[in-house]
Length: 277
Ligand SMILES: [Zn+2]
Image (tube, rainbow, N blue to C red; front, side, top):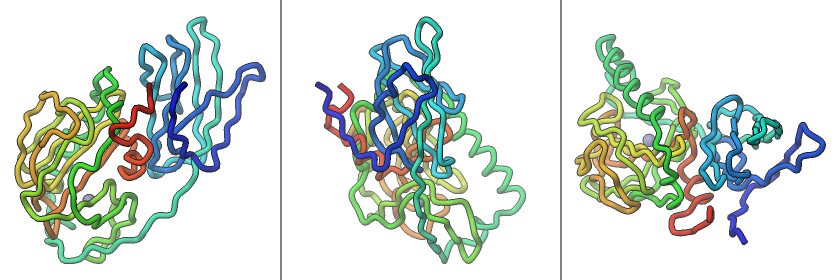
């Protein structure tokens, strides 16, 4: 018997085919959420046209972007080519408006030279997100990677030095410089950067099946690109490198390009709970 953590509120499903039963989806069907389920081994799955990785036992996982539309289309194609469509309703969320003042103005409105560098560095992050391991490392669940005060939540509309900017894409954990940072889940280090304009010392870990975590503003990094890490392994320390006004870890989780809420992911797939077996 599977022990799924069922925390989806207001889940509503529909199917295009009258004969097929909708498959059960678990996790959080909401903006910034994470969803998992099981299909017959060998079934291909797509979400709004994007291929969803399926393990050889039929397990799959997908993320829902902060700005996802109210519904998405899940298509399952069995080994004989028969397709089943399932409409997935995505619950909307309300986001905070967060004002951050006291940032160096040059990082809020950078000069053209710096804009170029920021774009190039952003390209490295996007490339790391698009590469993914075929192994379901995320099955370890996700733990909070550092202890400290939650100083910023996911999704907030940010107003930096009075100017509206992109929504906050992660969870901020404030703690003194030097506080250890641990790998949130098993995986492979997919990016190490010693000093990006916005994110400073930056680490990314690939947890397989399109899921990645990112750790930014670090003071030191103790892993190398390509290194395999286990959940809870130290990867570096909290700092204030890049665009920040105080020492904290910005911790992000994404599924390919979709930004997920780390608090939702940690609640839906907690560390040490064998919910996918
Ligand atoms: Zn942050």
